[in-house]
Length: 534
Image (cartoon, rainbow, N blue to C red; front, side):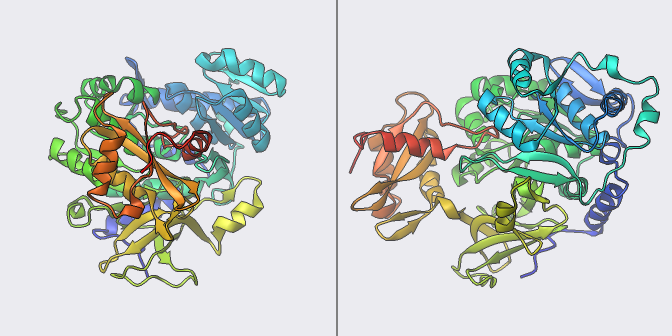
């Protein structure tokens, strides 16, 4: 089943993909990303500060030269920072110096910091001033050299350009960054992303979004997350701009996110499902108007159909792009053309111009389009990562024969559009039936008193696995466990109705904003099943 070209692909999209690959062959990804911006045009906006493209280019070269002058060669360099200009500078400069950037999630604790630093084998860490107080002792205990935000200027050689002349990389084989997966299974793995991976995926995303230097995106997703990084790559590449907002703001102060979007005249906004659920149910996003806003991106998991409908109704003149991707694919694997959103609601679309997507059954045979057959999404293309850092067993498991095994189960309709059913490891076995938690979560999300829900399975002598729902209300008292069960009974067969319901203030999340289900499962197993049992 060939899905290398999405509906609406054109000569320009194929050209963009080829350009991305060709330019990455030069070995200077950072220069490619920063080539288009006019010197005086804004590149980054953060808390009233503006960094122009010209300033960013000069500072990136200076820090890169300092790293080279300090003897950094072919190594992994840590980066601990929030969504700030310093993150962008440190990330791009590390790549410019021919090194591999290893961003830590900003909320990393000492145990996780030590584990990831040891796994990556790093010698130095670039640290934002705000995190220096806690990170410096960690680095000292690990014998890591600290490069603080304000302390690197003295290391810049007199002739920065000369220091960078000898920098060379293999754009195909050398990792430009190691991005640790969000760890939905509790064990983060370091995904090696090459220069060519980024160039290829960036070119595809620019094409289907139609980005230009006039575009400005509000970035609340962590830049240490592949989705957040893709916003940076795409907008810098076209000479546009990025408004940087720390990721915790959308959870704690959603109205401030909207104020910033309006004040900076953003043309675009990107979020994971929880981002939109919070904005729609806990802020004035549905009522407020943003004259400059022309598109929304949604990825990082399936946004329930009720919320997609709410988004469309709230901002009918804003184009919504529903997308699918994985860290192992650099960022994006597919998108649903906006004009197909109503006809193909719930679909992730088809593969990007440079990506071949297949849905394969147990014997690696393609599932039949238009049938109820379910298979695993398998991807190939120049955006597929090099594998997992120092983990040959997991690399062999998920990267086989030049293809990525995503672990996502899906079906294909008669027109070749893909619909994800669930993650293979998330399925529950209830009363002998395979049950996808996403179906239950989507039904619960239809209740107007709910912001979001997460469903896990717990062992049960009768059920095998009993569905347990953790539900976040719009406000305290807007929904009860009994109301959730009654709502589900009216819409689901009995074996899919949650047997336990817990109302919670919020859900645990990983660094990329996705719900961290292992923690919910642990919490459920520790509790007596007395919250609500049918």
